[in-house]
Length: 331
Image 1 (cartoon, rainbow, N blue to C red):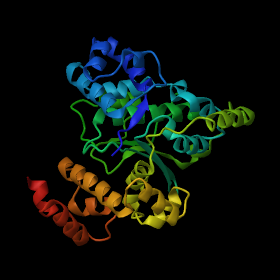
Image 2 (cartoon, rainbow, N blue to C red):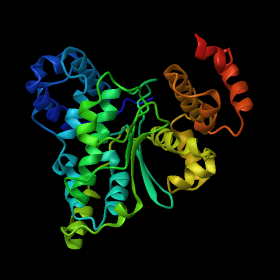
Image 3 (cartoon, one colour):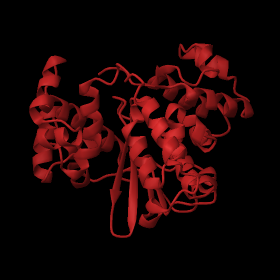
């Protein structure tokens, strides 16, 4: 799997928070092999794994174990980089989320955003496609904190989501989480993201200027796509969102990516990949992560991986790992 890259803006924001916690950011980034320039230049591309390592190591060395969340809390609209002007001039939060999803590759190769709507609520779901069994608490909390900043730009600085969900277990203290997100927190959830009232999506942004939005979009479309975003990586990202919905066929993934099944198949063949192998790889990664987390039952995991029946999942798992999932959970 091609290493994921992210904008260095996260490291630059991290440096501000780290110094306040008594951490030397220069020493921390040198420890993971990053150049000091990324502390000053927000638009460099750095390995996502290095960012995660810096955050996790800093959380262990600092009194605050929520450094990722503190970085996310400090996020401002301008920190979205080249797409910030476009986001600023969207008429509603719905439009802003659509544009954020469309241009997320300019921010990070690993972040996958999806919007799901129900009769009275909407769910903004985030996933980190890293290739690690556990993407890490710190990077995920940073990402959701940054998402909150976008919502508050559109809906007002005092806006509070109806709920915030994390797939990781609750930390020893959730004081900072409650200060940032409010009281409605769920840890050990089936997804990472936020729940909001459906009406929030269409609240008008008084600062919207359609002409500026058009200008910003034209400028963004001139930017080169990152070479790291190969078709196999794009398919993996899509599968992280589509598997829990049971939409994991070649046709369904191709439709999501805006291409024909034949085109998708041909592009995968050109990079030496096979669609079903990618589905299998993502399922293996996710199955191990969910089972190691101990927060989900076997039947819940089966559904999250797109299996119609638990028995089918159990047979698949036994073939892949040499033991049934129930035994894996006990080890």
